[in-house]
Image 1 (cartoon, rainbow, N blue to C red):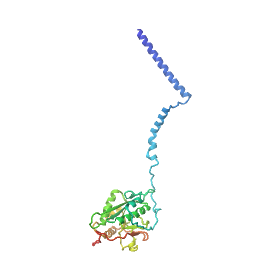
Image 2 (image 1 turned 30 degrees about the horizontal axis):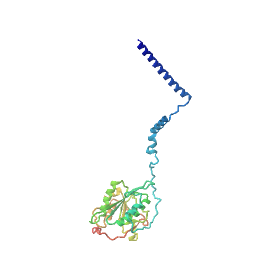
Image 3 (image 1 turned 135 degrees about the horizontal axis):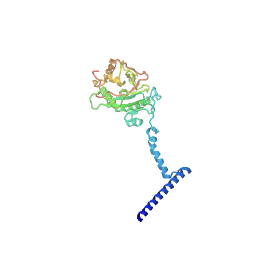
Length: 300
């Protein structure tokens, strides 16, 4: 009985102590509330700060709120402000492809787009090539800045024919077209001889509602059209126009004939060939002798 009495008193004593402690805590909290704001301890303050940062981290660091977000570019003007008209061409004898690459740091793998605006057209330049490294180097040196001044998004494709069989310009251009459309959705295709360098950047490398012939004159012909109906050298066709005429004929081996064939295809589909003004469509033809394997096509 004495054991039970002692246990009972101890139990009551513990309850009393617990009740007193609770009253003390409540009183301290209440007095702190009415006497002034609760002061955050350093650790508590750091915890709250970190918690807030964690809550808003995604909002502060999303790409939409960063300064590096790409802004939507406005369309380039119809007439580029960088055009300078007739240019005096200089062909440096020691020029290399490495030099051309160094001169065009913004060109990557033959591709370029203007940084200041959205180009009006995406243009693929197709250049058939064999044994004309010097001509190709000269053309690329002048063509890159020429196209950039026109504020075009462009890609240059050099289609090389291997081996020693007769050259087939038309087939190379067909192959170049098919490869180019695998890379990009191009708006316009420029079929460009490697030995013709444009002199005037007002000769726009853009496609129009009708197929366009860009070589009105060249130095080797006194800057006159070679002959009535001439449609060779450099031509521009939209994707749908080239598809409509079924491209070039693959049957022309050797020099000549494929450009006249293309003109006939264009005319058969009731399209009209347009040209720039004679003082604009001027080219320098880099002198060369006829290549072996590119003799005049006897069946042209």
